[in-house]
Image 1: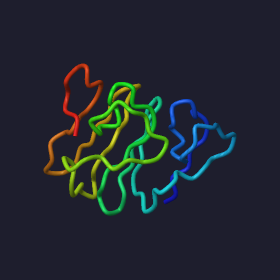
Image 2: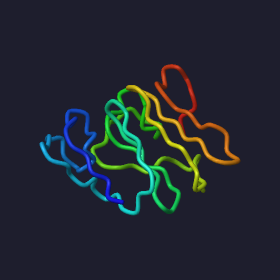
Image 3: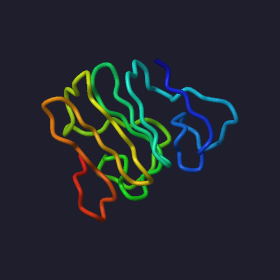
Length: 121
């Protein structure tokens, strides 16, 4: 599966190491072997076939889940808190500032607006 995106460049959401927009889909840079994706308002999440979680885009309230508030225009691996995601893992990037991962035998992992002090991995 190739992860393609277009528009929403002002928040780094294209994931192509550029903040320029595109009127056609572009491949997300450095992200191969993707099995699941989810796009929020201005950020995205992906699970690769090796069951690692990657995020990119706007991060003004910590929605990338990487203990930072710096936006990224390339995919970043989410920390050691998420490992061995199962085949049926569900990922969502809801609204402006929330990401969630839910898998078999694994509780819901949620991060959002770090001002609210929710779990950030």
